[in-house]
Amino acid sequence: MKTATMPALRVQPELRQAAEEILRPGETLSAFVEDSLRRNVAFRRTQQEFIARGLASRDEAKKTGVYFSSDEVLAELDAIIVKAAKKVRK
Image: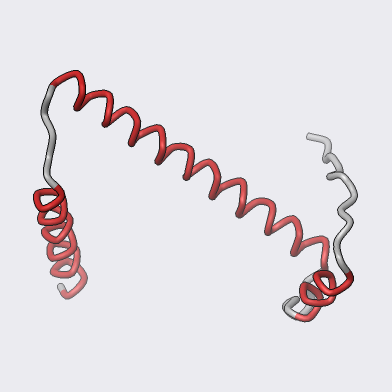
C-alpha cells in the first residue's frame, strides 16, 4: 500500500519548540506528529463508539420503559471493580 502525505501544518514557533523539547531519544518530529495523529484517531473512534452505545441505550430504555437509577449503576460498577481486584490478587 502506498503511503500518503498529510497537509503541511503551520504552528506557532513556541509549540514547535515545546514539541521538540519532549522528543524521546532518536524520535523525530515527524514520528511524534504521526503518533499524535494515530492516538487522536483512535481516541475519536472510541469516543464515537461510546456515544453511539449511549444513544442506543437511551433509545432502548425509551422503547422498553426499563430504566436504572444511578445508585443501581454505581453499585454494579463497584461490584465489577471488586471482582477485578480479587482476580488481580490471585
